[in-house]
Image (cartoon, rainbow, N blue to C red; front, side, top):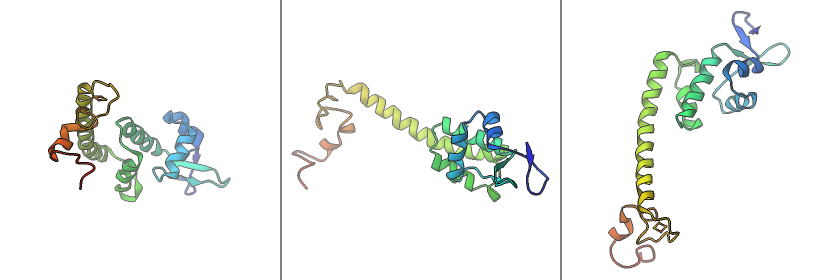
Length: 151
Ligand code: FES
């Protein structure tokens, strides 16, 4: 563990951050390239992370496990003042916001699963008969004929 340029915070090397967070070094570098994580350089030009990067990585991992796209995680973290690490209150706010997204995605997947149940998997992918190809009979609602061919 080292100190930053100010000498006031203990800092972690990327290897230490990886070991403590359980996240591969390559993933940490990826997060950094995506702007989710930031580091400073020590006198030897090595990356140094503040200790609170551990919490930031934990937030990223939990959000990823919940299926939140990395871009959305990045946008959420960018709303924090000075790019600081999320506090408990921040996490409560972010997770409330993501919960709505998750609910919508669960509803969408449930509909898809139900349509899959209705599809006999025969391979026809018929616009008329297959509930996966034509959910809710959208084609039928357009009226008789060949709705995808006729303007
Ligand atoms: S593939 Fe034939 S009903 Fe879905």
